[in-house]
Length: 193
Image (tube, rainbow, N blue to C red; front, top):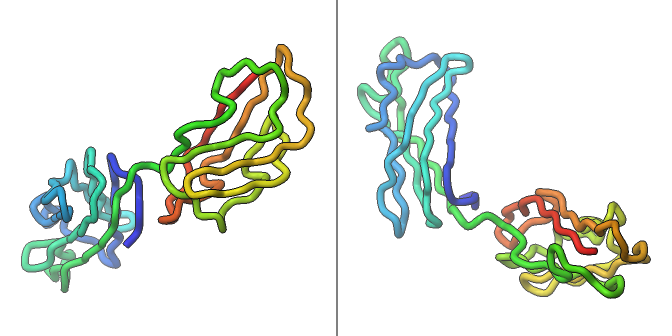
């Protein structure tokens, strides 16, 4: 199963034939968490072009889930009255979003000298295969080398402009690197002067 961020989630299921909208129901969707139990959907909607069922859930906690669109008479029937032949099942895991938990120098710091290294700490282990030195930018200048150690990434930076009135902005684009479960990083910006 796929690992996705916990919270509000939307799932879509495309069908190869137009459905009778009256056979699409909240009661025919089940979401069961291993620890959190059954999670009722916030909404289930149907649209014709293409035939698509959209299911929304609110505030899903971190857990392992099984989402099931139930089959049987009166459930997801096409216009000829043919019901979904078998349950449609999707397994997935929700986890806290992959984010940066700290940066050194700290956001908003006023420094006496330009640092030669930037250390970024994450809320989960980094997949080293997804990291490139240029993922971390300081004022648009890419880092020159990096070291990954568990949930920390240390980047060595080249010659930065002298400190002064202009802040040095640290950025990592969203999706630039992944955690060990393949979850992409949320975008990050910090600055020091």
